Image 1: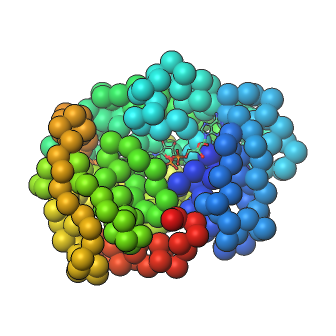
Image 2 (image 1 turned 60 degrees about the horizontal axis):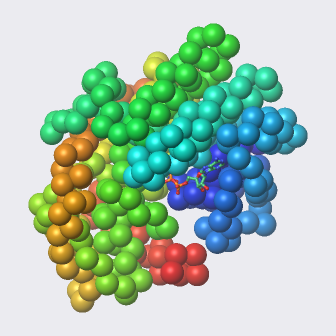
Length: 313
Ligand SMILES: NC(=O)c1ccc[n+]([C@@H]2O[C@H](COP(=O)([O-])OP(=O)(O)OC[C@H]3O[C@@H](n4cnc5c(N)ncnc54)[C@H](O)[C@@H]3O)[C@@H](O)[C@H]2O)c1
């Protein structure tokens, strides 16, 4: 099976690529700014195409000339970066999705899995399932709603097997900075022996998942023979920032972490107040339930960093 991952050398794309290569799939990575450092351990076993999602001919060519059978469409301008330049990121986050689905239509790609987000939902302090109100707080969230709807349209109109997974904030080795990335930075910086000022309040909680669950769930969604709905939540957990620091200190007692409030970032995070994601339907329809509690995430994450310092330092 030949699988194309857009945004394939990004944080989530690179971890997915590694897993698929190790499962014996033929993997093509399509990325506008390829970052081979992230996949240096498996680079010889996959193909990287420098290409731009906003250029239809480049997307069409990547799909046609490689006989692509499945696509994970993970390329995007994410979160804070998209909100900082909403018009510029429109091309990537809207037209990019259009172009990927057009390639899927023209070249009979069997399945397209799309990386959606908790950012589509109306803020809430509760836990929500897939039917909860879509009222994005950000331009990024609006683009996720659009992409899901366009995918559903292409499913109805052209029969493209489009499936979306709604991720909470994903933490794990190599993640870039954004508003909710502090949880990832707490662990990564400590594992690298670097200091980190945690910018939110000690009791601040935000929905997260570990990269290995994000990848496991995306693959389960891809592999499912049939789906009952076109978009699924991946269940989140919500440890407080202090809990994450305490968990890290169980493994690295002298980790140079301290709380230094960044009022602006903390306010932005608190106002957004993304809901916890209920993953009941993913579990019942796809048989996937997250495997990593915080107690399992932290030592695994630290070990991954220590084993692969060249990739993450
Ligand atoms: N990381 C998270 O916490 C999270 C949460 C919810 C949803 N998501 C979604 O998952 C996907 C992957 O996120 P990530 O954290 O890996 O982001 P990332 O920024 O690390 O990776 C995105 C990749 O897309 C590539 N890209 C950007 N513009 C492109 C273009 N025009 N053409 C081709 N490639 C382009 C970038 O070069 C980058 O490698 C995104 O769609 C994101 O919105 C991520």
